[in-house]
Amino acid sequence: MLNTITTATGPTPDAGPMRTHPARIIAIKEEAYAIATYEIEFEDPALKEAYQFKAGQFNMLYLPGIGEAPISMSSDPATPQVIGHTIRYAGNLTRAISRLQVGDVIGVRGPYGSAWPLEQIEGDDLCIVTGGIGLAPLRPVIYHVLRHRERYGRVFLLYGARTPDDMLYEDEFESWKQQGIQLYLTVDRADPSWRGHVGVVPMLFYLLRLDPKKTTVLTCGPEIMIHFVIYEAMARRIPKERIYVSMERNMKCGVGICGHCQFGPHFVCKEGPVFPYAAIEPFFGVEDF
Amino acid sequence: MSPETIPKLLQTLEFTKDLPPEQLEKLAELAFEVSFPEDFTIFRETDAGELLYLIKSGQIALYVSVPGKGRKTILTLGPGQLLGWSSLFPSSRKTASARTVTPTEAIAFNAAQLREAMDEDKDLGYAILWRVADVIASRLKATRLQLLDIFAPGREC
Image (cartoon, rainbow over all chains, first blue to last red; front, top):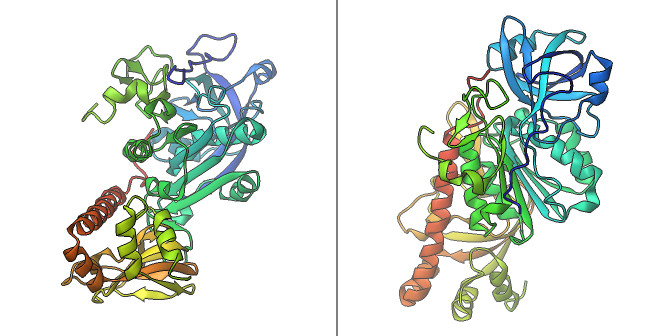
């Protein structure tokens, strides 16, 4: 069944779930204003060799004296020795990370959380709908699909950003298109020099001719955007069992102990962040929930 | 495009595809083909609306001119979508300008003739107004989301 939750693979080997491991920054790439991708690798060669993650999972990144934050992996799960995290500088920890340089060391524990159900949805058409930095947890999906292109049908990527300058991974778009991803970009605001679409990303559904019986929707972004994506998908008769969302909540421990990220009966850090929409529908959109 | 092909085209466009054949036929009698080159202004803000369009191909930007800030594109429209719905309401003026982003083909209707046909055939009038209301509701929804500026940087960790 599609509406099962793909559970976490657990923390790093030979460690308690709360133990942090040193990892060195080996590259930093500016993606957009106040957003950069950090490539890191574990200092411990055995851990570096053993570490694996699935598309959609996250690590807890730690800086001593400042704190921890959950950050999704944005790199290719097939090459887990180098782990990519795309980070927006928006809080104490991420601003402190912005001051780090190549060669600096941060603490990492993970991977945590559920993954996009890439094996379950083999054979389907995929409709990936995302906005802003929500593309980061879906980039591993794109890498996986491109690596196993024959296992999937048509693949649509609808991506929205605030302005053209806020688009992530622009230098990869052409390659994705050449490998069979049907890419549709839109921005919320633009001057006349922008030749692409303008309008919120759920509005792009009108461009697609989807087969509701074989299309799976994967979506990540601000929760209000996800609401509209679900509305548009269901208006096209895509069953809720075929819609997967990645939720953001205030995750602290990463292992379902502290309760900060509780969402109805679910712990987002442990059972999520990726949920089948059918599993969380009763709690989705409930005010103050 | 020959007149014979307009009914077939209307059967394929999202806005009209579910209409019964007799209504499609009436619409086809009123419709005519238009095409615009790239960067062509179809109408301007405050213009009185005489025509409305169903886009067959291409892309159109709706923009408003903001004093001191220049042109701001608020929405783009593409194949199957309705352009210039306000023309249906006789006293209204355009609230945005429309400019082609790419060469565009469309089916055009004279708004006064369409209103007359909708008055004569109430079933057709109901069907058209229902669809126009759906378009307006959809754009209102999208505008609300746009106003929320959901991708603006927020307070995070």
